[in-house]
Length: 66
Image (cartoon, rainbow, N blue to C red; front, side, top):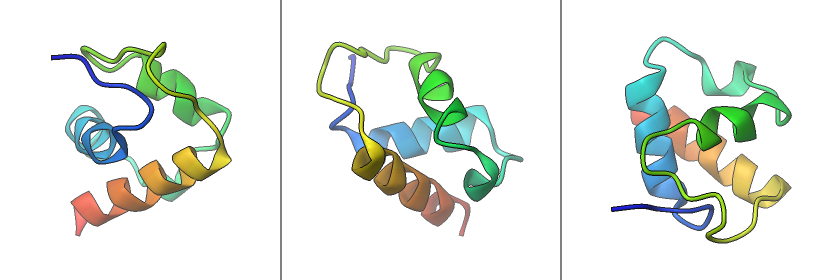
């Protein structure tokens, strides 16, 4: 099932699975959307990306590591 920009928890989980050794806070807001777009089943036409979305994803991704 596809998911989009509003599904920040799912994005964080998928990023954690795809990039387990990456520190979320080391990823720039320029690179992060590209990484997200490459995730399986991600639908970039669903919702909008913005700084608040990227901040939420980054925070939740870091929580996945803990």
